[in-house]
Amino acid sequence: MQRQHQEFNKIESDNPFNNALAQLASVTDMLSIEPEYYEMLKSPEKEITVSLPLKLSDGSVSTFIGYRVQHNNARGPYKGGIRYHPNVTLDEVKALAMWMTWKAAIIDIPFGGAKGGITVDPKKLTLDDLERLTRKYVNAIEKDIGPESDIPAPDVNTNSQTMAWIMNEYSKLKGHNVPAVVTGKPVELGGSEGRISATGRGVAICIRESVKRFLQKDVKDVTVAIQGFGNVGSFAAKSLMEMHAKVVAISDVFGAAKAKGEKGYFEVPFEKLLEASNRLGSVTKIPGAEIISNAELLELDVDVLVPAALENQITEANARKIKSKIIVEAANGPTTPMADKILESMRVKVVPDILANSGGVLVSYFEWVQNLNRDHWLEDEVNGRLESKMVRAFKDVLDFSEKQNCDLRRAALVIAVNRVVSAMKLGGWH
Ligand code: NAD
Image (cartoon, rainbow, N blue to C red; front, side, top):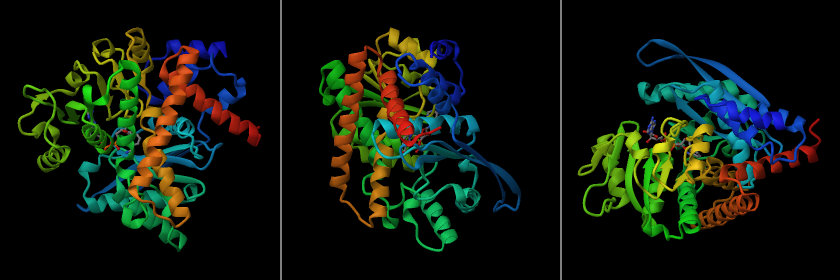
């Protein structure tokens, strides 16, 4: 495995799958797995590409490309979100699918890893077109998804409405109601209480635990900047503000809003920030805030930086300019492997994505369990279970990193890969 470990040193790219492979290669010196398992884990088990021709409301016809990638199901059915974005590529979906395998293993739920996506700018389609595109996609991948085989969920630019369409189309094809085919549904259709806020809430729990451990501070005494104000970023901000942390800046694709005033953090209630950003179309329109760029947000002098948008935001080019002491990766793959090395040399603690944002898949698992049992849990029960599983996973990773004297990403990855390989061996995978 020495050769694989050396591969890690050569790779720096904006291709997320290369980065996912580099991360895997980076732990081969710490893994006690046979090379054939490493080879199996490097490639997804199945890659599906579908062509989706669609007559749009304006009468024109466009063909969209959709993907579903199933990385590994040794520990349970494939599980992973669906992303709608103009930059979706097969390699991006492959990386996200691999990260899902590690994520389910680290938070210790019986799922494997998958991901899906359509290369589309949803802002350019009407809601009607988006619904028909979603239904076409379901028809194209119907045989590969299902409550026992592969369970999609929301990701960037998809939400509970998208999941409702998927559930409805899939149920029509099966001839009966199948709520457990997707998670992140509206509560009225069998969605779980607390699912919408789960990823952000889990991120906030990781922040609370990491500042306690690494800065010996209470979360109410730390400053935080959050890049991305979508599902994950906004609910992370909400939970942090409920914990009385000092959120100093938030951002979206248009730019960032930095709190003005003596205190230097947002004092208005979270609901007001959200309402203003929704009503005015961007956080950059929030009255009274200073507008800065997303790049400037990443370089703010804060205790904790939370990238909650897309991949490759912290790279070799800007890693040295990071001033925060802790980075909690709410997004998937926001830090490249080369940036990781730079941050490690600067002693910045990086709480990796596969741990930090695993609250979403965890509550997705709770939703799936409730659907299969025709049950409905109260929000307090969901949040209580989320809290204890997140704290446990955080502690597992922290303890391992201290014992092995390695960074948190490698610690999380080693734990996850060992769990997956153990399941593969027990199942007799060759
Ligand atoms: P979302 O679509 O709800 O929000 C994305 C946010 O990022 C928006 O505010 C958007 O304006 C902003 N953004 C987009 N491009 C940007 C750019 N170039 N610079 C700055 N901001 C930009 O998506 P989400 O569901 O919140 O997902 C965000 C990240 O979290 C993704 O990496 C996703 O894979 C990951 N994630 C999501 C979940 C979930 O439950 N939704 C779970 C785990 C991980």
